[in-house]
Length: 182
Image 1 (cartoon, rainbow, N blue to C red):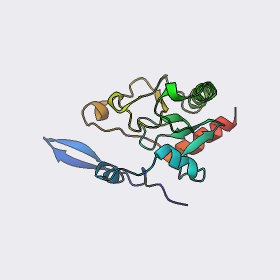
Image 2: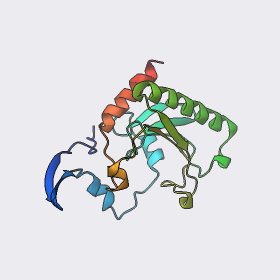
Image 3: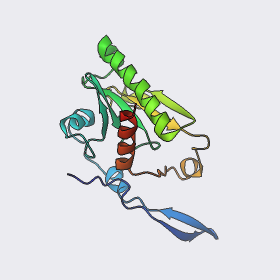
Image 4: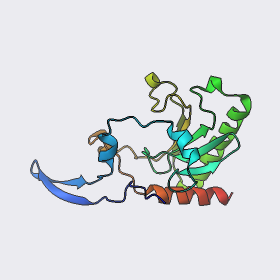
């Protein structure tokens, strides 16, 4: 099984800067993502469905017409996406049965994340089209982002970085176990 490179090599070092000590957070796995000049071929969602379930594809739950997958570059721990199997760019392109199942998976995701992480709230939404911020514009999907009071801190506002306290494989396991206990 392919080893996921995310979060496996992070540590802190104090460096001197402007008369104060500053924490330097090492996340060398990010360099591959930042410096990538080639656009991956295919669709990340369709490709994920073609992989065996587990650490490689990060699929939390599969339905008949849609599935729940972890965001590989999450905003917070527990950030998932609900995706139809149909490779279509917009909600208006989806049939009623797919839309209904997606809404059920969103509801179940909210319940599971609430049980596992106890967030104070959620952001739920879809970015449809590149101009609206869609990173994968040709395959519509919903983001579910758990939120906590105070989760926007200096790292995000000043440093332009997010610090996640949990490995993606641990998040996957926790959400799968939480889902099964329903």
